[in-house]
Image 1 (spheres, rainbow, N blue to C red):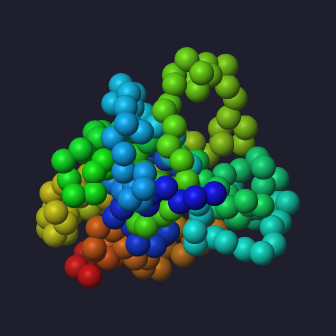
Image 2: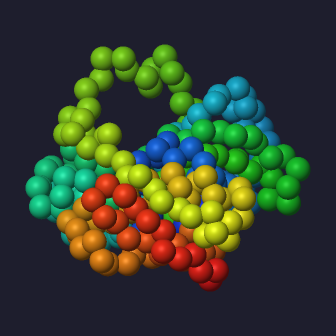
Length: 223
């Protein structure tokens, strides 16, 4: 498959990325297309859709072999389930699928057309292989069941982010940082309350600890 675009985001590493798209609406991205696909007619009509499907490659998870079972982090990292029952990056084919909000199509920037999206769950530079519109009548199933995710979907931390530290971040990045941290970036099998974690976001290293259900930001360092 040809790579048609790459997405630009605030995450240069996968640590801290939401485990699913759409969980953090404040996390933004720009989908910049390769030169041969920068044709305005290819995007005609896309502006009428509020959301799009992005098919992309897990470029940092390529392996020669695959495992039929994986250990989802939100299940504690110990319980194994079938790879096809998860969205794990470690798959026979390293294809990712994300539903994101289409904020706008920029036809005036140097690399136009560029898609501005929100609710991302992809690293900076992730290769994109296709874009498709999200069609509610077909894609939204009112009778859908959610499998084992019904036990983990409500998991969320309280975030203690002091004003002094929050103000170090650019104003437009603050809400995204708080939303991202509330989802608990840690591997769920690590419960050491004294351990300090660091997540790279928008050019800053955000240091934090977690005690019970509260995440406390300890420091914010410009990288």
